[in-house]
Amino acid sequence: MGWCLCIAQAPLPTLTHQSLERYPLSKPITSSCFVDYPTHLAHLSKSIPSCCIDYPTHTPPYTKRAWYNPERQRKFNQPEIFRRWIETDSPSPSISQERVRVVSYNILGDDNASKHSDLYSHIPSDFMNWETRRKLICRELSGLNPDIVCLQEVDRYDDLLSSMRNKGYIGSFKRRTGEAMDGCAIFWKENLFCLLEGESIEFKGFGLRDNVAQLFVFEMNKGDSRRLLVGNIHVLFNPNRGDIKLGQIRLLLSKAHTLSKKWGSIPIVLVGDFNSTPQSAIYEFLSSSKLNITLHDKRHLSGQSSCRPAQFVGMPRQMWKPYIFRDRFSTCTWTDEEVKIASGNSECTKLEHPLKLYSSYASVKGNTRTRGFQGEPLATTYHSNFIGTVDYLWYSDALSPMKVLDTVSIDVLRKSGGLPSKRLGSDHLALVCEFAFIQERREGEEQSNAADTKTARKEEDADIGEADQ
Image (cartoon, rainbow, N blue to C red; front, side, top):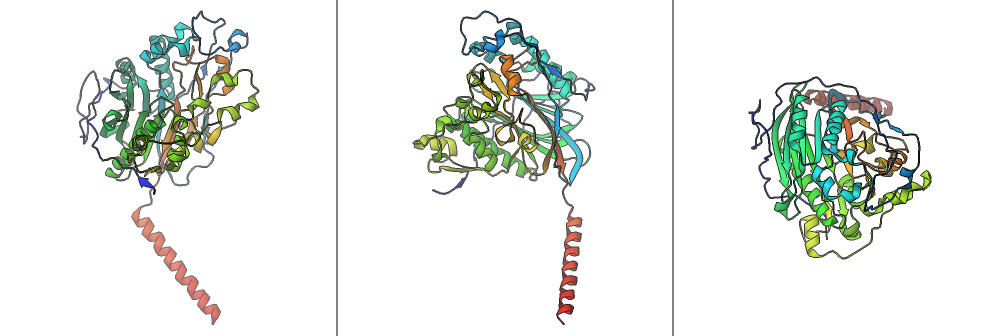
């Protein structure tokens, strides 16, 4: 069987979301999309405050615990979490002055936190309270001062909207299909961007469960009016259904490629919770653009089963890496239906997507305390049943990551016993990257350079001819 290029054919549904008010855009968009405008703009602080975790000195009572962490019983100095900016050491020589700071953040839906309370049985109830967490999340976002914010697991959109509007952001929310209340949300600064087109993907319409994704095309209101496509996704969690995860990601990449071409092959940023680790086959598909699914067991395509917190308790620091990066791929038989779900074609077992993507954090070198396999963070999420990296900021050509906000070491996370905490409002860490656009060479400059090269070659040939004579 040969490689197949997976391009979705079904049209995207019209973007809709719950909003408090509906206002016309300053420029028309090409699909039906309602956005929430702030009543006024507020100056955002450009400083990034240090973030501290205060650990409780006692363990709250509980009836059921998925994992016991003896570190919580010890008295120790409460370490601070310093998330520092790491700048690239190899910037592109042709970058523009325009910068775009993007945040991806799974904020832990209030309903999910309640339904899966066993994952947070060791977390004080005060830290799990939604209003407490909302304030922490909004405070953190305000300090990060992003231009575009992509959130996952949002089920209290209106609560967030009121705060974000006061900071000068417009928002759009897409709820999951089915009974779930959460979904994805994107906020962007009204004074910096104009929305040209907004679309959403309901994966249920393609037989791929109730998850959703968002794709927005923005145009900057300053400089060269550069355009950017931003995608936001929360991939299915179920570790055993790698076929569905692949199907959702494949569809997102295909739709993003089509929309980018529609607007002149504009650069792409795709972010979210991909529920797949850096050592997984799904990561390989995203980063290499290809994957032969027959070489992998669909139950382990995401690599989630190899990141258990109990593996790290009492383990020397130098031994963490073999455990966190262990995967258990094995050959298995794929049914025709599973192959069709993953690739879109029951006869296609070798997937290929049309984008060339790079991971922001892997592209900006960090240190061994916070980075691991592929240069990715060692962990972007932590609760009693999982510790590892599942969140990413992917980007395409024509963009260059200038700096990222570093994550947290495993040692600090392990001592905390899990997230949320007194200072962090979610069980995920926010990922932040500041991008620069790569300057395009103007047509006149290209023709001039080509003419100079041609002239130089003629002169060189003439010199060679004279030397031969």
